[in-house]
Amino acid sequence: MQRRDFLHNLAAVGAISCLPMSIQRSLAAQAGAVSVDQLPKLEGDITLYLGRGEGGLYENVLEAIRKRNPKLNLQIRRGATAALANSIVAEAKAGVRRADVFWAVDSGAIGLVSDAGLARPLPADLTNQLKPGFQYPEWAPVTGRVRTLPYNTDRLTAEQIPDSVMALADSDFSIGWAPAYASFQSFVTAMRLLEGEKATADWLRGVNERATNYAGELGVVMAVERGEVDLGFANHYYTLRLKSGKPDAKVDLAFTKNDAGCLVNASGILALSEGDLPINFIRYLLTREVQSYLASEAYEIPLVDGVKPPQGLPSLSTISPPKVDLTQLADLRPTLNLMRRVGVL
Amino acid sequence: MQPQNQLRKNHALGLIFGLFALVTAGQVSANGAIGDHVNDLKAHLGQYSEEVNWLVGKYDGVVNTYETKGKKGTDTQQLIDFWEEVDFHSAIETNYVPVYANIWQGIYGVKQAIEAGKPVAEVRAEQDKLNSAFWQALGAVKLAAQFQEKGLLAKVQTTEAEPTTMPATLDDIKHRLDRVVAKYAEKLPEAATSIVHDTYLHRFEGVEGALIEQDAALVEDLEKDFNVTLPQALDGKTSVDEVRKVVESMQVKLDKAKSLLVEAEKNRKDVF
Image 1 (cartoon, helix red, strand yellow):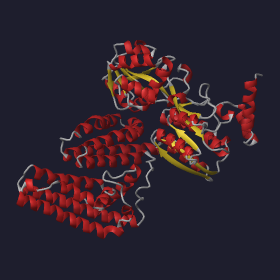
Image 2 (image 1 turned 30 degrees about the vertical axis):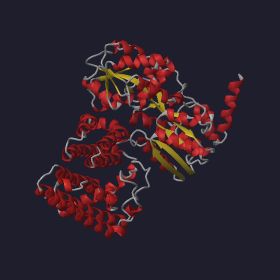
Image 3 (image 1 turned 90 degrees about the vertical axis):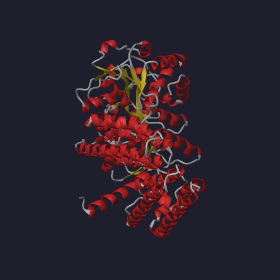
Image 4 (image 1 turned 60 degrees about the vertical axis):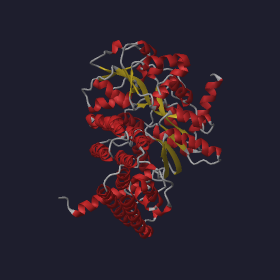
């Protein structure tokens, strides 16, 4: 056994040891989704900073956790994800800690907090439940969203769409995009990290010549469906939700390969205070039940093994996202400067 | 005809909602910090009544000056200054934004009529509308004071609370749209446009995914309203009444959205 594997396993054993024996056995036996029935009851006071999420569905999850754990005193502070991340860092500098856990819709905000050295290490048995590529020592991705190319099915076939996002800058397609939208900016950040500043600037200029701006990415998908543009850039769930409400919608999803065009970004959670309660609280979000709920109700991609993806989305294993440390997406300032410099913002 | 008590009930609900939404928006008056008096309305009702009477008298004085000395002899800036001087300003701003917008509309109605050198009768007609808005506002604050006393209204300035459900988010959006009209009536079109953009990105975006599963055409309509129709109406040339019409039409659609989402939530599966 290599030294690193040995240490890894040792850490896992140490972390598991704080759980009852039956649960230890259960978690040790399986990497993947755990049922909520296998988890200990949550007791005590905990404060969660919750970045703005998908409507009220995260709230439904939290309410269900509360109901299941009547001895848990869960306090929630809500706000824009980036603002809460900044608050956590500012509070730490001031020598106070109000949040015990931070659930952010955007992994960039997680990066901001973990880069400040405020995140507590997570036990290996918890991070091992997550799919390969989504295992981080100090934070847990909760659910994912993949960048897609929604296209109008009357105007294009999947075969006509290149599998390289960079090639779209030289195509003749009319394109819809939402440059002011946070997810789009994370996508450009990933492109910047993967392809470099110059290639990204050239790409932005090239697409900008044929692009129509929209305020948000649902607007992009709806414009594609109306045939205002041939295709667009958007997170996957807008198309799935539109098709759920309008099954004959003239829109489908295409994916690029191994580039920023199919980046899988994630919401994530980290623990800011020590002890079992924050860790066990995080375990609840990774349960089969919560992961299935967010997949079926919010069309988000479950990131633990053994839970089905949302209807209409290919399995994550068939998508080839690029290898990007999601916490690096926190570095938005160079992206915004670049987008302003080339005139798309 | 709608029964009187139903009207009263709707009005009261509007007031409750108005204050609640202000808290969730963490709103601060454009004319300075909101004083603590708004959390004890009842104790200040006498002061507010005096202020309304004072305002009515002051505006009458300005119009009298116009009648005797004409446009050049009248300082119309006083019309703004008087309104910004009174505590009643934030009392109504925190309670019932639609009437708050009417007051600004009335002030500018008088101001612009004077500056355009309109006949005194026309200026008086604008003044009458303004006076009606003041009295209506005082009534709204009195009613709010009753609810506040019974503990039915949340405290102002606790801030940082956000709507936690989709129906509450839609209510919050409606209230923010009332503020759009108020800011536009206050001759602050850029502030009004910022509220529209902010509301779209930080509120409507969070519910439209769920809403599109229920009624794609309705989302399409509201997308256009948020991104085209309303921003275009806030060009500084469109009348306040026209802007209000756009907002009211959006609020009707948001009510429909709310009932669809409430119904959808009943059928949603349990988490555990």
